[in-house]
Image 1 (tube, helix red, strand yellow):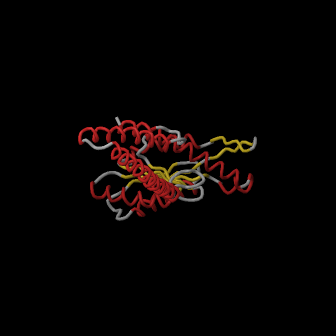
Image 2 (spheres, helix red, strand yellow):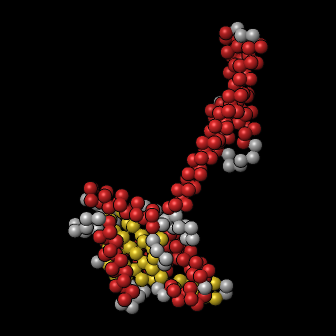
Image 3 (spheres, one colour):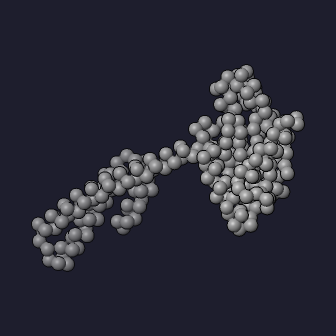
Length: 247
């Protein structure tokens, strides 16, 4: 009953009076435990109160210690999240991409699995900044990231989405060959092209260009895949934009 009571308090969302609740449970059940000990071993009432008091002191110290550890853990988690996520779009950043692609590439090579990647960026993004200002450009980036992440979550949460540059985004497909990526790639492409974004009453319409590729037997490091995807992206941009290049 004591364990279930502590567990119930832990699951409660509100932080108010949490210490008081913990102490109430500890004092009640601790007192009950020492009452049974007193009866079983014929302890005096003075000894009962003394041990009960010591238990309360111990519970206060234990609560403080655990609370300190949890605060430290939350801080570390917050710092880790901050280090691995782009502050503007909330997408994972280039540092997170580098860690993940190295891991996925090694798994792919070791287990003979598929691994594909898609890269896209916003066409003429500099013109958006120059015409509407950088705050408008930031809003465009946020909206693009939200739409792309929504599409990915609706299809396969194991697919990873990153902001790797200014207006450049990468999508990593663990376990996907080129054909398997088509549905998600096309859905992102259709969702983002001619996307309407309202900036203080003004409508901005954007387009994107894409490059897609998959790991081949000749690839010896993740950058081999990255370079090929990057080349495909620039092929799209240099040949009219608003298109997908995949090979």
